[in-house]
Amino acid sequence: MAALKLKTNIDRLVGNVTIPGDKSISHRSVMFGSIAHGETIVTNFLPGDDCLSTISCFRKLGVTIEEADNHLRISGNGFEGLSEPTEVMDVGNSGTTIRLLMGILAGRPFHSTLVGDASIGKRPMTRVTVPLSQMGAKLDGRKNGDFTPISIRGGHLQPIQYELPVASAQVKSAIILAGLQADGISTIIEPAETRDHTERMIRQFGGEITKDNQTIRVKGGQKLTASTIHVPGDISSAAFFLVAGAIIPESEIVLKNVGLNPTRTGIIEVMKQMGAKLDVPETMNNDFEPSGDLIIKTSNLKATVVEGNLIPRLIDEIPIIALLATQAEGTTIIKDAEELKVKETNRIDTVVLELRKLGANIEATEDGMIIHGKTKLTGGKVSSHGDHRIGMMLAIAALLCENPVELEQPDAISVSYPNFFEHLNNLIR
Ligand code: SPQ
Image 1 (cartoon, protein in one colour):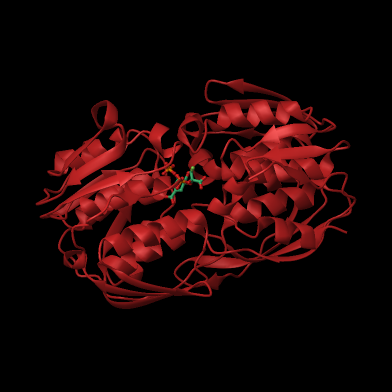
Image 2 (image 1 turned 180 degrees about the horizontal axis):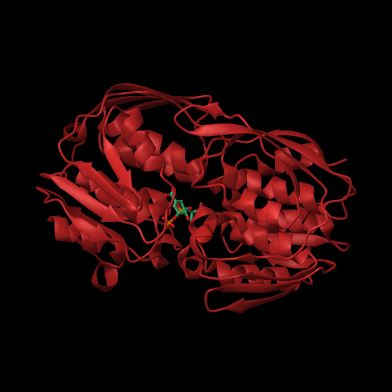
């Protein structure tokens, strides 16, 4: 797609946005619907490119999935219902698809191959292939099993006791999904709490999983039963409008139906710490995943430090938090976030490179970034580098720019938010 001229010099943002379905929960709804017994109905499914890749992989594994108007009907026949694919499975740009799928395929007695796009080809996979191999699956890939294409011959699995070397929900989830197929109880210890959507899904599908501080235990051989899943809005998508509402003058935005799972709400804590006028509901819709409406108003912001156990609770929001920090008084420090280097792009480098082009005073560190605020943003030619979160962050940054801004590779945004520009344009006054 050609470069896109972004809207600049915006006076106000006012109105409501109904935030589309959560990407992490949408992926998992397809996966659990496929490995459970019976017909699962999913509503408010996110039809982003990543989640469509997950659907395509499960269809290749023989699962019937009907799709209409963000609703899915999945006919699951248990783990045993999955069959050997005749074709390579393509996960596109989606790290969640490939890593969680490896956990499922580790226990299946057949061969399969997983590929993805150029970005997936650079993301590390040994973090998943190593524990799954210890459980008894045979996995291999380029560079000693670290990179795609990944080939898997699954089979009989032993339970594992595994201390995660990095705080990663994808690694944890892959081991849980393999653990559901192992002979006994698997134990996983997290260095810091990460998103718990997989654990919640297991309970929603009638299974059992326990959590004691950061130790998770799951028993193999459980039968999961089909369920009805309503996917709440994605707080990682809402984050772009939360920041936009806080930094554009005279703004007030109501964000409807936002998922408020406490393992994902780090952005709310950071924004409040920075002085944002952000209203959070006292009572939430208490489905298996809590959700509610958020209201953000233009705010006077001050710098902060973002670090430690908070990082996994806002890891995907760091690009937009960096932009927020350019509009806060003082120096904001983001640290303990080395994991940013192995996302769709190296998000430390891409955030710093692109925000500097717009005039921000920001520098990269080994494990994060330092941002000096408050700076005027100017304009220029920027790129998403094929990373949806970098693309959306730059579109919000452009709203403040005095000069024209052109975004290269804007199509990456459809990975997690296909109607992002439509929602943004509706708020511009
Ligand atoms: O799925 P993918 O490509 O890894 O997507 C990202 C994103 O920005 O949307 C990360 F690049 O989200 C991950 C997130 O960073 C989604 C996720 C999940 O659904 O379990 C967990 C996080 O990754 P990790 O590696 O920390 O477990």
